[in-house]
Length: 212
Image (cartoon, rainbow, N blue to C red; front, side, top):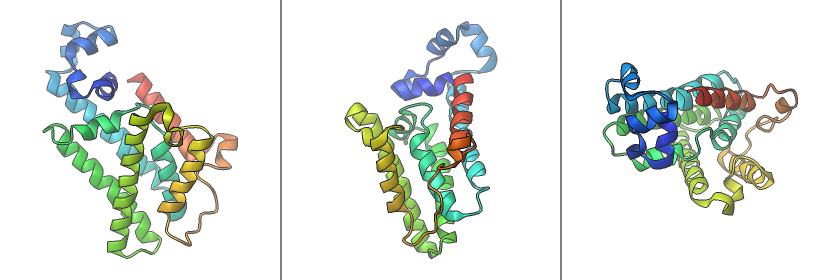
């Protein structure tokens, strides 16, 4: 959705009906046919982000029965699939905004809850699983912040490249509990025939974002 791209570029102030109408080649009047006001645009954009970046991801990866492989694929997906660069750092920068706060809270709870479930299945106690989940999520948020800040100076946090792949391996090994059985690297082997979970979900999310 165009509003999410605008938010990633300039934060909430960048979302304006006039600018979005121009970008989409629509008139202001036709834009209001779909949205009552600017607040409705912001709400719709945030709901789309919640569905695509959290609910759909959890539904897709939740089908993987092996919790170790599920966690590995989640970590790979989280740090390599970035269809709207800078979006999540922009959202967290507005964490106290009344429109953003409840959505961000729900997304955070859902993501940490999913991570906690993975760690519980891998043998962690409830308290330990929760701690591991919070640490993993904090690592993810920091990864995206570094990407937004570092640009070409931090190739390790890019979505592609040799340095990025090596850093991803380090991240996975750090976040997986010792002794976790993970027979396949995230997407490894799957990529050869184009059927990898991360590759498939990456394409689907990018296609949906590009069409919006």
